[in-house]
Image (cartoon, rainbow, N blue to C red; front, side, top):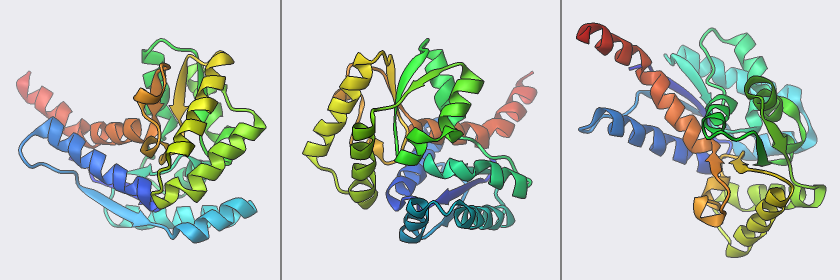
Length: 241
């Protein structure tokens, strides 16, 4: 079993989900009371969020790179950034550590392709919806067409994430707002919906729409379990042969 290095705290709410889902996945795969080997570095979220909204990407990269180096030094075999938005710093991380990074777009893109879809809507922070660090990878590596909400809907989605979901606040009225945004994306041609912020799954699930939902948090956690067990699986297969 490889040791998973988690860069979390962005926000703490989603980091809790990663820890839980990875351990549940490990127990599901291995049985008994098995759990994952993990190292977690949690950043200070208020500081991080302020830098994001100031657009101080250099300072953010410094924080994330230092977190990655610390996790690597602690014995992690690969990295998982527990946030879609923080993948804006993914290339900086990859340049500064020697262990691989499991990019959140890859298991998401693979799941969408496996479902046979080509055009999908994306919900996330303003940074994720407006920039190409996630959408570009999904388009270039998986041949997908990504639709984002209109400007007004983007502001609604972004506000709910930072003012509510990152604090663990779940409001029925916000769920209804998200449902309406999803409906408009569907009317624009979206065949499915990416929950492209790791906290959105606290608010929205498959029961909220008839469109297929792709939750990046769950897909990323499942991929981390698979990557952690990859060497063990290969070893077991070699023995069986």
